[in-house]
Amino acid sequence: MFLALLPNWQTLRVLVLLLSSDRDAKTIGALLDEYNVAELTQDPRFVVVVCSEYCEDWVKGVQTGDDYWSRAEDHIAKRKSGQVNPRDCYVPEDDDPQAEDDMFSKFPALCFG
Picture 1 (cartoon, rainbow, N blue to C red):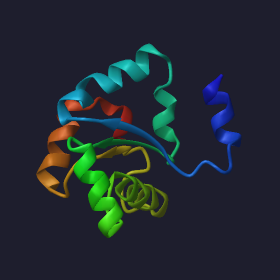
Picture 2: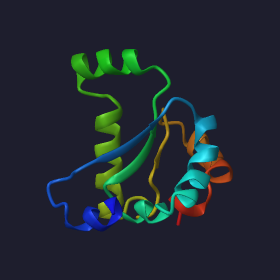
Picture 3: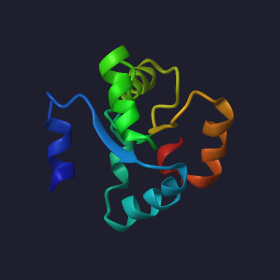
Picture 4: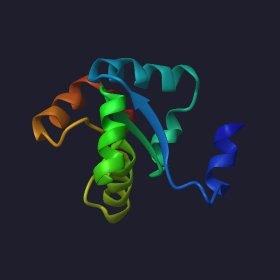
């Protein structure tokens, strides 16, 4: 039912699935499949964000405006502009390109085109 509402939910800008570690990403693809919501990854507003230190991230967001929400919004803008694959819904915790490359082997093809 939720998935039927999503395309018509025009005011929704960001739908974040927040993970505490990259290890959790291994199971997310399987859970999306199990609950028959894998098509969420096709909506550019859906992102999977890793944030291991939530409180520190929150304080950083208050002080600088840079937190997991801003990383999610930046990633969505990149998906919509074509800077990243439109099905790439994974947002790593840091900007390390190797960290993102490593996730291709952990996160099923659901979030990577």
